[in-house]
Image (cartoon, rainbow, N blue to C red; front, top):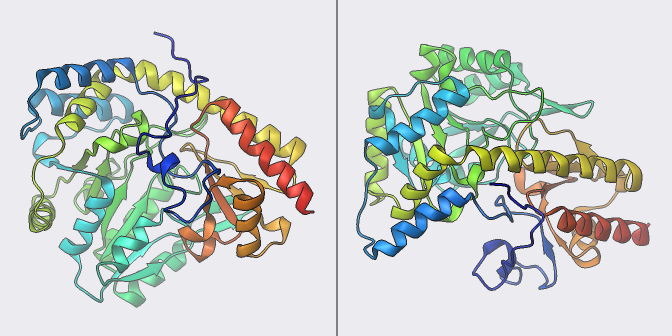
Length: 392
């Protein structure tokens, strides 16, 4: 079927985190939200139908995925990424962040260091510090509008801080990098050399743009697979975040045992019934919807690119290679953090994600979610344009 992504779906009044909690999050009620990473699009009809069937059954007891669930998930990663996974590698969690926190507890002790690459998805930092570990940053370098890894600093930080756990964000949120194979291999070789475990968050793997290809880190070598916890989920791809299901793959039996132990210590067992149903349906029947939504989002990205070039040249787009979250450089405006927040929230009446949330290296930037109807995106950018020109 043909999907209409221009359709405005009313989300206010649905207990929607994105639209209904501005005041609770310290924003004004009339802001237009382009922050949290879910879409303003209805998910695939095939997923909705499978959920309706589950609801009409009328019993919502404890549930688990059987062979057909695994076949759907493994088939998706085999067909799209050439990655063959085994059923005994799979651990299901309610979300990737839950798995990150479990990995911190499973593989480090209080006071030990965990390495990440800021500016990065802020829950990475939170699950490290909330568990009384030390956050060590290997900052990404912005070179001529393109983020690069400082490999020398990466290895030096591992040695100096005796790092044993590294959080890899691939594709990277928020800077939009899709790491090249040589970059991943260089990171992996350093981690193998120093005995560093890798938690690879690959939740945005289905959103790469033309000319870029996602490579599953653990698929690049047996040595990498042996040190890696690979975190996947259908949530970003099919707009299913509220159903809370993630698929974590670990080929090393000892690492899997330790992670499962940490999950059990948190008192968690079976995932959400509706999450299981939606995940299986998505990977079995959602490909056509995904192709259509990616085409629409590519046009949204082109719209933003042209709008900034023609009407807001003060703001620089960091050209994304993946994800539907774009990273904008506001530094030419010369505003302080407080002034930029006032400009965006009070003058433009927008709710974005301030770059400083992603670490000190994000200061002066904003993250914007473009997974919305184009009329909404146009309204947001127009409000921003009017606010900036009035401010200047």
